Image 1 (cartoon, helix red, strand yellow):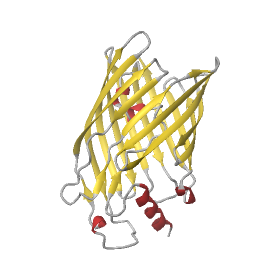
Image 2 (cartoon, rainbow, N blue to C red; image 1 turned 120 degrees about the vertical axis):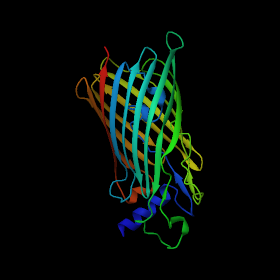
Image 3 (tube, rainbow, N blue to C red; image 1 turned 120 degrees about the horizontal axis):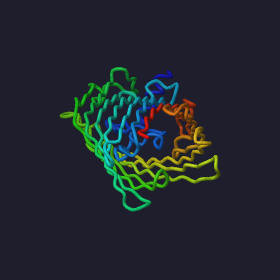
Amino acid sequence: MKKYIGICFLLVAVGLSKGAFAQVDPIYSLYRFNPQNITPAHVGGYEGTEITVMNRQQWMGIEGAPKTMGVTANMKWGKQKGIGLVGLLDEAGPMKTVHVGLDFGYHVRLNEAWSFSGGIRGGLGNMNLNFAGLQLPQSGDESFATDRSTGMQVNTGWGVKVYKGDGLFLSVSQPRMFRYDFGAGGAAYKDSPSFFVMAGTKWRMSEKVTLYPSTLVRLASDIPLSYDVNVVANINGRLDAGLGYRGNESFGIRLGVQMTKLFYLGYVYELPTSQISMMTSQSHELALRMSISKK
């Protein structure tokens, strides 16, 4: 019974109803910690090399709930350029998406205080819809009768950012521009690439404490607008503690620690505030970053 209820809830959550499928790009709570997931404009902004691995387990206890695993890497190339790599495996109910891409970023000083960066992404992706394990209220719906696969398809993305040092910034991006195409007979399956608008700043509260407020807005056709608001306090440049809210969806606690000069560990624990809270009490996101500075 639990599996049946969980799958039905997922079908509603990802937009799979009345013969239509709406793809939603993965959700990230640690977007400021690793903005490369969302925008290639981040590439080249760090004076050295960054490698980040992450894992997100959403709605624990529900079979078929979203799971995301990813890796990003980027390095400075010359004075103004950067190159990077991104890999993603995302699963949600019957949907499984694999994507790999290459990033290029370019940074320009606008004046003594402000800088601008732009980035592009090119890569390959594949989406599969496996309906074999679904338990549906009504059998015989042709929309769910046959498994679907897009095959490996070329995709691209872009991002732009204006920023003031490591503080105030505004970023707009679309990490995936093209819809996944299921070919003939796949018209019922709608795929909606997302636009992301990200902004944040930092406030120095004392010699030991700095606040980092930020927000992220996701926009996609046929999908309700989604937004995050977060505030993180950094203590002594080593420990992070903060709170986050995703509009009408969840409330989260953010923790992080600079374990060594090379390694930083970030973690988010989320409690759902929507109707999904009747079935699950938590989501988890964990990320580990290795930073190798040129200095």
